[in-house]
Image (tube, rainbow, N blue to C red; front, side, top):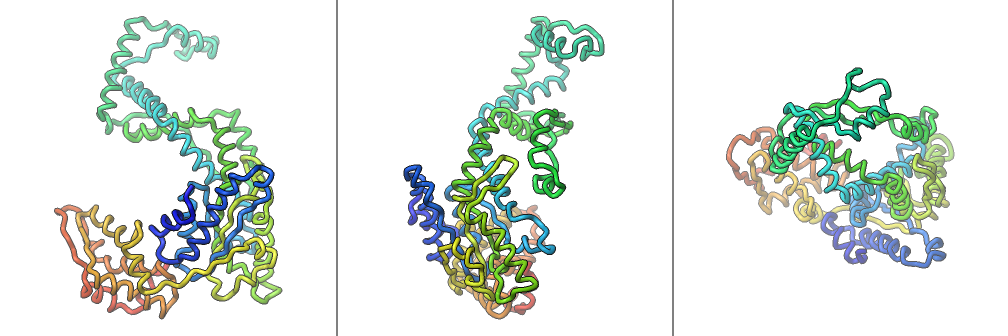
Length: 466
């Protein structure tokens, strides 16, 4: 487990500034590890210290929480508090955030289990593809005596060959099939047949989620119950061998893993390590009302309260406790204040941290310093079309300055505006790129930025806000 300093060092790779916030979440994460090492009777008494991050939009609140979850491979979901106030507050119930977290945990754990059985799943998929190719090349899969007996027991008087007698395959037929199959397996291992088209049976995925079933008044476990008795639907698809390998590997991996164990582990992981990020919590803070919309906002707070306090939420995987989940809330709090939240909810978020507005130097560093820096992203994108772009130091300063000034004079959307400015800057290059020529280098200098950005008014840049 990473130490708080190591956690901050990792966050520094992706988030510029906001050292206080990084330090706070790093300690919260380390405390989870410390709690796991306590005696069982004491462990139950130690609950996570939930956090409220207050600061302007686009300064890194969501990114801090998301990167935090990735560092420790924890289930993570982000929800907007405002969604619970929509349509007269008859939309999704607040319990859905916990159900979403469990689903995220299932995907996380299942992916790990699939990796463990990947070698066996790949081998099984290759065998299935070889069988299909052998059949398409005119070979007939032999039926041995044991298979014939099983078929007769299964079908009784009804033969799968429309009443014709099925004779066991001779040793010669079996040898021919084995030879053909082994040759195809060898060819597949050499990467041949990748573009050949084959027909495979694919299991159809069920449509409609648990939330939809709940909305229709259907028990969440009903679909699961019948799913155990009813055969899964399949459909035939014509795909390349390369695509078939991916599909069949996943199917074979699903056969090899124990889903009951996956669910048990995933539920425990969601309960003990899950992180729920509640964004825009300032939008449900009642600021001095007492009627109208404020009542709805307070109602949402009171519905969120028991989940944050610790309760049991029913999911299709069974009851899930929220007592030890970590809740991180965030909001700009430009109009309302943290004190406008109901006292009970404030008490469940004992740690508050303020994130600072970004400076001119911050914007410049965000362009190039993080591992997922904006300039690195656009450079990689255009190189796929044989264009290598290089930015001079003066150009980067001009871009940062344009972003800073636009945020100061219009709506402040933080670092998100850098994307809109760089997109505007590279619009002509992106539009005319074809990739049909050798690699060429285009230098973006201060003059280029001035012509494409500085000439645009703040209002023109503002139009790109989504």
